[in-house]
Each structure stands twice: as structure tokens, then as C-alpha cells.
Image 1 (cartoon, rainbow, N blue to C red):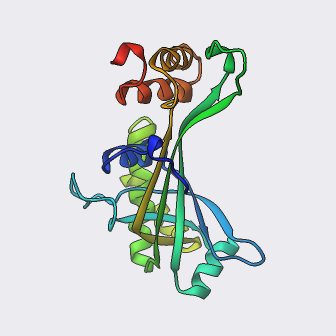
Image 2 (image 1 turned 30 degrees about the vertical axis):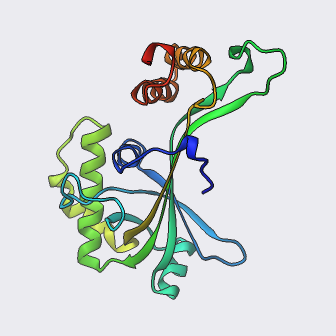
Length: 217
């Protein structure tokens, strides 16, 4: 991913936040005649310690075995792949720029991970599926305990392929009006903050956290 220096962020904290808040990623890899691309849930394994570097981390995901993408992974024995995470984003109207000659744009956050895939054994796949379900329920649902569903997960897991994705490269793009002056940034931030969209409000929160805008200086 081409990322101008202006839109880069340092460290693993921000990309890990994106992965945890927006865990549905696009997994890409070899395909015929075009690359395969499958939407998959991705989690950091529970044995990862706080502060562990993202590069070198072994993430967990899975997909259905009837997917041709899975069949290609089996044929290839895993191999190189990429995960693409979409964070908060939204349209920026040029009316916020107060200039006679302007163009609209789109503010967005994205994380690309390059890595290597290993196919999980059957017992590992059950752990991946069950842990993923509980992790996402705790994070986005009502916190329902899924331990009683383990037997059901065991019944359906034969149709699922577990995947270990070892991260070899991390690329981030935080395009949030950094090229504009603080007053314009503040107008953009205020527009997103006042939106009824949760994604838009998250754009505003991210801009604040990165100290963008006239009120953040």
C-alpha cells in the first residue's frame, strides 16, 4: 500500500486498535484467473501478551472449506497472503474548505498486513472457531457465554478451515486531513463528530487522538 509519510502513524498501538475494532478483513491470495479475496474475521490469539509486536504475531482466522479460496490454499499448502482491514472512514465535502477552487475527498483509516498462511489442524480449527466466536461476542455482542455451544461448534467445524496468519509486514494509512491547516481540520472533525454515523464519529475521535484540529493544538 502506497502511504505518504504525512499519513503514517508510528508503533503497533494504532494498527492493533483497528484490527480489534474492525476485525472483518479481506484475505487475498493466489487465484485463477484473478486473485482470491474473502471476507474473514480475524483475532489476536489469547496467548498474545500486551506489547507483543504485530510483526511476527500469529493471527487467527477461518473460512468455509467449500470456498474455492480455501481449496487454493490447500493446493498451495498455505503460502504468502495479505489481510486488508478497513477502519473508520467518510466523505469530506469541499464546502468545509472555504476556498473557491476545491475538490472533495475521503478520509479513511486502513491497515494492510502481509504474511504467511499455515493451515490449522482439525483440533486447532475448533479452538480458533470457538475462541473467535467468544471474542467477538464479548467485544460486540451481549457477552453471552458460549461455552455451552462448544459441542455445536464441534459438530460444524468439519466444514470450516482454520488459518494461522503470521505477520511479516505492517502498512497503515491514516488519511485524516493532515494536509489541511488546523482550522480546516477542525471543521472536518466537527462535521464527523456531529454525524449520526458511528463510523463518522470514530473518524472524529481518531482525529482528536492524533491531535488534529485547531482545538487539539
